[in-house]
Length: 396
Image (cartoon, rainbow, N blue to C red):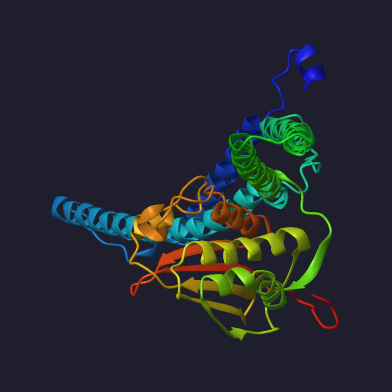
């Protein structure tokens, strides 16, 4: 392109190539139309005239001459009508043939024209947050299509840098924010553990501060986990049983379930729901679902857990009873800091990150979270994940 500009020639752009291509195509179509029309016209009716010498000698009079002229005019008119009719039929046939030819050629040309764009589209679909290092690297002349591919490559490079910076920020924030929390907690322990008697007000204040520090620590952990699920690359993938994962979560919270006199129905937890993903994140997903079911329930209530496989999908469902909930509010629970509060639980506890973390983890693993208000009351949380193709002999 640069050499052509130095020589004063038009730039070899996609627009110029397509213009020349369509011009040649229409030129060939027009030439074909003319050829077919002329070939049909050659078979038109010819006027056969009988030379006067071939007729018997006769005496021409003025009346006979006029009659002969009228006869020739009739013959000429009939020949013209026949030729016009034949030409009309030929043009219609040529038009039909060229329509078919033009459609076929247009489809072929359109395929060749759009081939680079299809290549760009397919390559762009393959690139996600896990492989932003890949590039389109479309070969070809420096035209508009190549400029588009290079622009997308530049965008991917900027996105990769942004994601890398965000991951570094998450890692640094995890260290920098946890350190002062640990220092504050240690200072409280030292202040309360002094040999001299500590005033009751100081002990109560220390307990209150420890509770708040624990809440801040859990909130920070939720932030970091949410950021990792939404923007971090999933490493250490393994084949995991959702049934065993949710059963482990239930066992770890057996004391909390007993304290609230909750009844757990886990008859549909089967060892057929296997998926591939990060073990830590999927375990946290199951933990959050069970924690949510325990915290947002009423004493003496129930929890129903199911882990099944359906076709190519592994499904984990956790249901609870309770009050009838607003469907519009339930649909927003997968967003950070959205909660139903006292209308559902009788208290305003929780950070509002539990279900948003579940949704982020499910999305990061190629699945999703479906939240629905049960008509009889309570909530149904269903996580769908891709079913693992191979699971035999793989530990949970």
